[in-house]
Image (cartoon, rainbow, N blue to C red):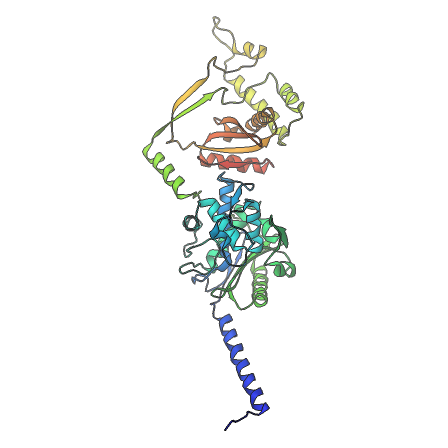
Length: 476
């Protein structure tokens, strides 16, 4: 005999099922462990932490490291923002969130950077890793080397995008530390993380963090992340007046609750942080590079080997002196080539160079020899051999295989002019370097070669402080 359930009974069963589903859903959302960290960005002082050293799934916070390494690779000349990257089948097949790249497609590196930073695109992140290291596995190894150099002691990366993978883990402390390094080590790229939207080559993409950026005063980055295993993660930075706070949350239950928690933590940070504190930027790690380059350089340095080169030295390594500072400044200003904005430094450097040259000669000299002062008054001193001098053996043990680039120009003359001006203005770090103009399809690159890594880095920092474009060139 068929028993029919009454309508109230069926309605009650429906309510029971709905409650069970709701509870299961709530349990899943709450399953990801919670962790948090708040620091004063200026000093690195910890203002609040909870489970900060617990190893958890970072999700797309991983892309902060992917982008950090890309910025490092660009700065060291491994590639540039206009490099065309060929998309592999592996990158094109990554699950969402994605830009929609196709296998075999070529796209400029800058668009992949935008897609990874703003949209958190997984296909773009994988393509970036392959562009830098050849494969995602090799890139993951470089990520881990860089993490150790940054002091991220409890982080292990297995991929470039952050999708859940066994052993791919980090902590709130380590991700906060990485966010601070992104801010201070590569400030020229930090604005990417505050863009509400950007064009990524094939389409306009919106920022995954746009709600928080719009609603919290002073917020200007950094990165969101979500997977089922991780929950809703966020590393956020905000600046108010002279104060800047970085807060990290792992394991949020939803976008809204995570944003509310991060806002609460940032408020706490602004309350606890002193109004004035000395800025202590984190130390930038040693350049890690790719494993092959690193091993080769280490072998050459350790063995003290010599290498064969055929470099013609056509000019003196020191800038040539002019008869007077006034004549030199007039000659340089008469051209229409681009300037680097350091005219005053050039004139001062010329005066100093001439004063130093004059002081090398005594006032009384042997009567059989012409006085050096008289020679200097009649003609400029040009140290140039009748035949090019060829260096056939050059020791690599000194580590002077780094250089810097100070721009690309439309003519060889313009590039040489900028090299001369820069050398005169920055004699303390560029003394002894080789000025070299390299012709390419896009113009003439103005380079200083034959520097140590430390000297090249110092020279670039000093020039950038004068608003001069500069980037380092690593060993090739």
